[in-house]
Image (tube, rainbow, N blue to C red; front, side, top):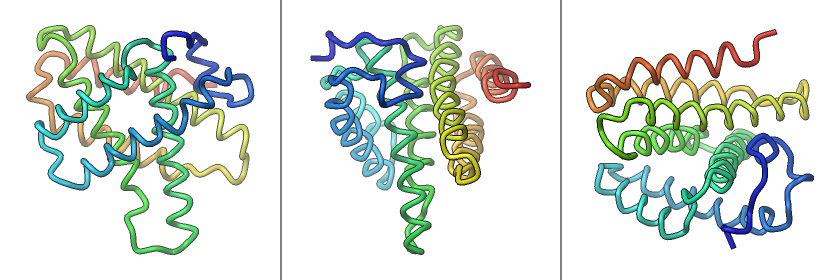
Length: 193
């Protein structure tokens, strides 16, 4: 099923209406995969847990192509924002940022374990690509919801991402600086008016 999907990343990140039916069918499966990661995150979130989860993503063929990977991260940020809204609306004592923080950690661990350790350009490229998707979702939600736009989960995501990147700085070695430049570029320069 995943091999049949081919849509531009910008379309994937911004609009449900223009997506093929296959993506609408895939959405709940990707959501379930992300919720499973959040359960891992609530536990120890050690490297071994991530590696088990990475095998799960690989067997689900989520990372097989750019379109499916883009859809996965779109689902992750949308689920994170929706969970934040629902927890805040109910006034629950549950951490409203749990899914947002889990997404940040997932992204950093995916970069850490992707490919060769010495391939700085690949690590920076992956971060830039995923940040572009998240920023497109942010922009789309801002346009769609106007005054009702929920900015806090996005702010928390970028804050957690910076913190997680710094926590794993020694693992990234020389890739750290290019990745930080990508964070700066995608978040502050891409949508500058």
